[in-house]
Amino acid sequence: MSPTAIWPLHDTAASRRCEAQAALDLPTHTLMQRAGVAVARLALALAPHAGRTWILAGPGNNGGDGLEAAALLRRAGKRVSVSLLAAASMPADAAASLARAREAGVTIDHSPTPPEALRGDDLAIDALFGLGLARPPQGRAALGIASLNAGAAPVLAVDLPSGLEADHGQAFDPCVVARWTLALLTLKPGLFTAAGRDHAGDLWFDDLGIHADPETAAATLVAAPPIGWPPRRHASHKGTHGDAWIVGGAAGMAGAALLAARAASAAGAGRVLLLPLDPAAPRLDLLQPELMHRPASVLHDRDVPLETATVVVGCGGGEVVREWLPVLISRAGRLLLDADALNALAADPPLAQAVTTRASRGRSTVVTPHPLEAARLLGIDRLEVQADRRAAAQTLAERLSATVVLKGSGSIISSPGHRPRINASGNAALATAGTGDVLAGWIAGLWAQGFGAEDAAALGAYTHGLAAGTVDADGPVLGPLEASRLIDRLRALRA
Picture 1: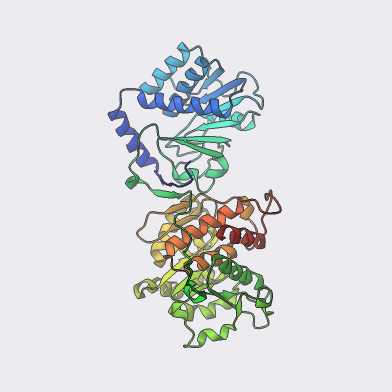
Picture 2: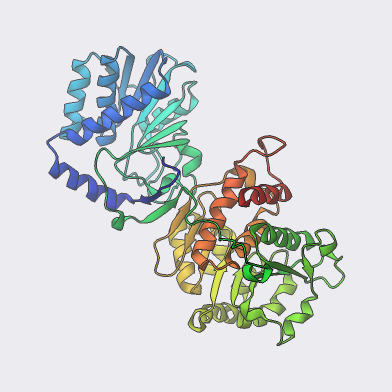
């Protein structure tokens, strides 16, 4: 993929419409033949020395794509076998591809397992199911997926890993775990969120010469910084770059607020004020003298300029954060709600309604829930959130009149009336304590410098994930990434 593009993501319905239109515009069988060329070409590039190639083909067009690739690979001198799990009749295009594969001398049987055990230097191609799968694979299809997953050979999935739902990234049981996936015609949202990335592996894309209408996309993929860093003019000063206020750190949780404050400073906020909610908290500014320590009681001072500040509330907030929310919701010019602040909103509908009314007063809000926090705010189960992450984020954005960053694999950035964005960066190294606090502070530090809420959220989420994949002085992180070390990486990116 290009490192500079913002990619449209088309759901099943839009992809079907694009496919149908292409079939009308092109000569018969052209689209499937193009798909076969794309699969064969990538297979030869990824596994040029594969001794054997086994293709598990299904009954529809996805299977036809695999059969086209089989014919081409056989003509290229490869040992190719196909397990065709098809009914007595196949779509006309797929039937034509089956005939071509037989003419090319491809070995075809109907077993859900390869003719002989594959080795690590062989290649398996998953062409079983594509778009439209709505239930768990069963029978011979399930056995075929088990064979792909249990085999030693790496798997190249055609369009989607079989068993992965295209629109929401739900993985049925069983579901192929691919080393690579070649998306065809359109990019599907499910490849990038929920279980998609765990099952798709490294992603490749071929539009088959058809340019799907971006206006019909269900979401967009943030696969590069969506906007440049805030400019820092030579004649600027600290006041030019905004104030970030971090309100959090109840008893025993001061570290969460400190992480958020350090991240806001690393992002470039001109001044970062840290207001711990534990009156007995140590002077955290002594741990990082660039930070400015204030007691939480100053929030009741009408002369304190909250209206021009970017305020983060909730990081390590505990139960005590609830008593500070009314004044912050009422006065903060830009308000980011995280963690315990979100739980307080879920338990207190009038507080949530007060957040919603901020937009009518020209004040912006960002909320950064993980799936359980989003479920509490929506009054549903966490599994329902994960079943349709885009819809959950968009519903929450509309309900709160706020920009939502629904965290997780393929974080969703949603704002009222806008098409959702799916963040492409990040990895499991971020699954450690405190990285969410860092994200909250990092977004706030960017937001304080003049971005709109959605741009700050998208840039913050993308660079937060990007930092988890960079190499620092200690080398690459092979396991969990500590939140403090993440801040150092973010600061290096910002520089």
